[in-house]
Image (cartoon, rainbow, N blue to C red; front, side):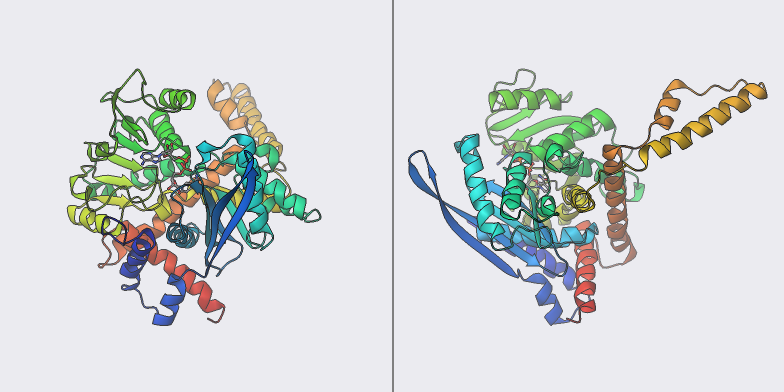
Length: 476
Ligand code: NAD
């Protein structure tokens, strides 16, 4: 139980799991095997900082090793604890199965306020934490591959990769020990934006199905839809930016840790983000109304609500007041089990976390494959693709001239058609395909059987089914 009398994050995940397995035909033994977290390693280590030794506590949980390596981000936050890390590791298992990335589930966390330390200090702390995990194979290209999460990003991943390679100088696949690295250090184009981009692709896919939109009482396309976003970090910023700049959504409120901004005509996401990066707060942003207490804005009138900050923000205390007919869980676990029941009762459609934010692990998978193959995506094909397109364009132009047909290809079409796919285009294409395919799998269960009336249960059924199949084929 947490302090509001609701189940803890891990219990919440387990309750959602139980709700789904009740509709499946699994033996109790296998069900239990899939549910439990295999192991959690806790480490306490000291780092000499500012003239004294500071002790930090970190965790790495492995939820399921039905496939290896196991995969999952490393979070830096003061609130990190074993329960949270285990809940997040379980979600990673189900997420990887749902989007068919060949990994088991894991997660890591360090109890730290990253804003309290400068860059050099954070590097020392990160290298030391990484050292502790690497020496136990809890960071390893074939066994356990972390990625960024709340409070960490490309910079920390580059330090971790470098630390691994210093300790394993002859491992030719060393760079694959962690994903989310900057492109110059073995990363892949499109990883930073990937989770937010995946949220956009998930919504685009949802809006391709009028039947699904009708369940949320929505019509039309994404254009003009009013969106409220909580958390303008990596995930929330990219999701809000792409939805407003590319799909015509109106971001009517942004909720951050220190307050909220509101504008009925829509916020300029890039402008707000620039302000926040410079000032360290959204307070004082000149082009919108500011309110000190941001959380009640979650209850505002809108078409789509995107919690993209942290877990447990929609709970039994505020769920009944939520007005959004559609919620997409960009964060992990933003809706507690109790709130989920209230929202389902109200007919709110929830696109669940294990699907909605799977863009990150999907592109991490591409990065891992790139590291193992030691070649950038598109390097072999791009110019060949362009040469073929050019042949076709030249032939069309020749035909038009010879036959006096008067055809002219627009310069815009020609430029697009003659440009071969670079790594970013391939990554986005692979991500879009993944998000569409996974949605179809959930949708089949959601509409295909009479006893499943929400996407979350459908997602669990797909994932658990796949993990069960994997265990069965191992003879378990
Ligand atoms: P981040 O640290 O980049 O951003 C989090 C943002 O939320 C920050 O701007 C922070 O100020 C804000 N925030 C914190 N507490 C808040 C509060 N109480 N109210 C409003 N805003 C608050 O983290 P992120 O990587 O964007 O992760 C956000 C969520 O998405 C987490 O649940 C994480 O597990 C999940 N997620 C992240 C990734 C990824 O690739 N980064 C992938 C999958 C899931």
